[in-house]
Amino acid sequence: MKRRFFSFAGMLALGTIVMAGCAEEQTTKAPAPTAPSAEAQAPKAETATNAVTPEVAKPTTERVAQVANTVANKIDAIKGMGAICSLSGAAGSSIDCAVRLASSADGVAARALQGTLLFDADAVSFEGFFEEFCPAGGSCVNREITAEAPNLSGSGHILSFAPKAKSEWAGRGSFLIANLSNPQAAITEAQTGTDAAAKGVFTARFSLKKDISADSAAVVEIGNVVAADAAAQEIAVRVTDATIVTGTVRN
Image 1: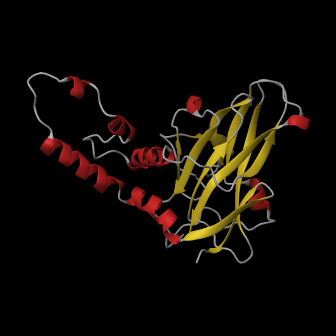
Image 2: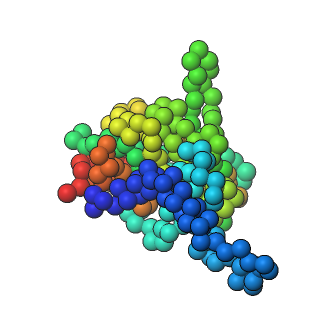
């Protein structure tokens, strides 16, 4: 179990090398036909899914998002689901759902985290990820986390997600939090039962497509949660009281 997250995080760390090697191989082996064949005009599904371009000097954030998208597309079964919030109100309302992360009293603070959000796409639509950004000497603002600006201001981690287009989150979508420049940094040092834990690391915003009563609220769940410590070892996790709680390193 320790290696499950390492394989994912390792893809991020080695993303540049892998893509550079693939690009070089394509350049070396690619024939130069005089006329395009039918096979050449119809690219294989594998090429489209694992898009590798010769532009190997892409920004780090773009490489992270590309790898996260590839991995997320391979997640078929959702495991270990737990509710993180309930949505109700009038049609058109926007509601922020806090993604809370904390360690138990004897637990390890997560250095990296991945998960998949699930929701009723007939009732709500995903509007993006946001965080409270408080610039020095300025007022705090609610800032959207995008592929162009993916940093979590509190810890310096990068939050990448897939699908990239919010409109393509048809009931599910995955996210990955990692810090490539400082892997030792914790996403949060918050422990269960504290105000910091209740506040959350970031929020997922949803818009109600129809009137939803509190008695039949739309539930947002999270599954496939994997957390890692500073050595990329998998940490035990559970979803309790709408909070992702990390425990000790798995044996």
